[in-house]
Length: 356
Image 1 (tube, rainbow, N blue to C red):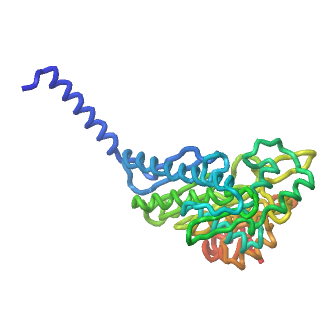
Image 2: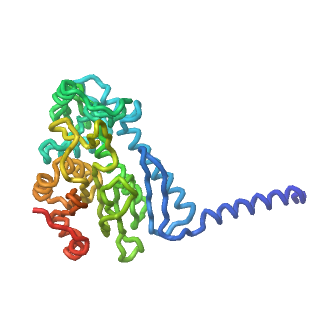
Image 3: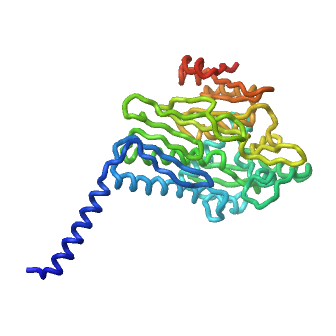
C-alpha cells in the first residue's frame, strides 16, 4: 500500500496529465488561423476543417518545417542554402540537386521561354547591381558600362538542366535568383502538406501568394481574397475574388522601389534590357492550379506590360487580372480565361474590362 504522501503526489501528477490531455483535445473555433514570419514576410494559414488545439499545433510545426526546408534550399540570403552552393560551384560542372530545386528551375525555364525572355532566373547579378538583392549595396543607378557587362552574362543559355538525372550546371558565371518563384513553390508545398494530413478546406497566404482549397464553411462558401489598390498607402482592396481549389499570385511595382534624383526605380527588372520596368502596368494577378507557375507568370507579365502581356496571357490561356495606371486612378483588365474561371457576373460587378 502506497504511503499517503506518495499517493497524493501521484494523484497530482495524474490530474496534471489529464488536464494537459484535456487542453490538447479542446476543439477550436473554425476557421483556425496559424501565422508567423518567414522569408522576410509573413505566412497565414486558415483551416476550416475541425481541429483540436493539439492537432493545430502539430499542423503548425509541419507547416514551419515545410517553409524552412524551402528556405534552406532556395534562399539567396543565406550562404549555406542549396541554391547558393550551386551558385558558388565551378562553372561548367554538373551539380546534383534536390527534386524540389530541379522542379523550380524547370518551371522558371519554361516560363522564360514562353514569355520570350521576360522571365529569367539568371538575372541575380543585375538584381544585386540595382541594389535589390542580398549584396549590401546603397541604392544607386549603375553606370552603363557595368550594366552592359552584367546584361551580357545572363540568359537562358547560361543555365543547363538535366531533369532526368536531377542535375544542373551554370555555363557562365551567373547568379541564379529564384525570388520570383520560390515563394510560390513554398505556398504549393504548404498546401501539399495539408492535403497529406487529410485537410480539405484551407487558405494558404504566404506574403500575398495564396492557395485556396475547399470552402471556408466546408460547404459552399468560397474563400474571399482582396486584390489591393496599387498605391503606397494602407492596403485597400480594389477587387474581391472568390477562390475555390485554385491559387493566385500578384506582382506589382508599387511596394519595392527606390528613388534618386527624382526618378523612381522599380524592383522589377526587364531581363531583356537590364533596367527597371517603366510602363503603366501597376500590378498583375495570375490564377493557376500551381502557385509556383502563377508566381513566375505574374512576374513575366509584369515585365511585358499591359499590351504585350495581355497578348501572351491569351496565347498561354492564362487567367489574368491587370491593374493599369491611368491619368486619374486605375483601370482593370482581365483575360478571357479569367472570365471563364470566375464568371461574367463577377467581371461585371467588379468593373473589369476584358483585354484584347
